[in-house]
Image (tube, rainbow, N blue to C red; front, side):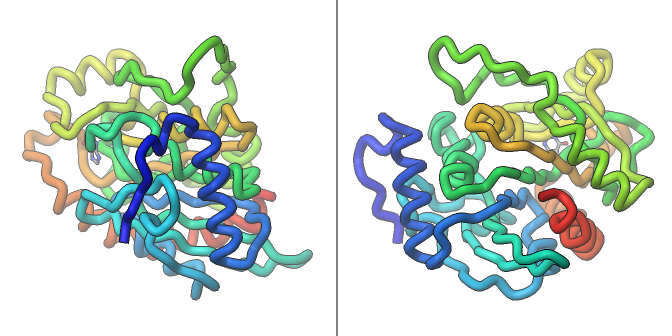
Length: 277
Ligand code: HPA
């Protein structure tokens, strides 16, 4: 059960170091290569990677809060994926903490910081999102090319003036599109939530140049990049954004669309992971 000590995030990177050490001890694997964060509805896509060598509750590791959202299972898995030249150790986070949970920014980025401290040079962030771009269809994966942060929250503190020009790695986007040439790229807006956007807000976002909207990914991408990891973001369009079809939005629809697309998303991840390192 979760028994997290006081003052957990007064030294966030130190806490991430301790968490990485606990994962290494738990799995017997000194260093992982790649991390995969599975967002709403993506959890079953992880099953396409086969049987994990280890699985445990995330909140048994220092700094991880228990899950508070349906569709976010709060587990950590370790996988060994065989490639033509060796093995890739993949650390999978089933679920994440969101800003709208009101616990602050530190637990939101603790998973990716832990992953980088555990050795991961590549972080793949997946999410469920609303489609602002009317060309998108429900069930379609879209590669994140860039983002717009509307939360005015950064995981970085102090004079850390980080360049975000190539935050969502062009190198990796090219590799993924080589695997599936039908994949499109889009600009993701980070919305704090937990309310969905109003139709007027979606119009504003579209006018700003956004294609996708969701409540995650952006702080994690920044935190991972700040520690030197290469980031790939994949959004699954689970619904048309507010006002696009006139239909009301609900979380069950988001989860159901994720489940329906799980096989496709799982196959995509399984196909690309060996090519990224
Ligand atoms: N808006 C914000 N977040 C979301 C949406 C949406 O329409 N769908 C899934 N996550």
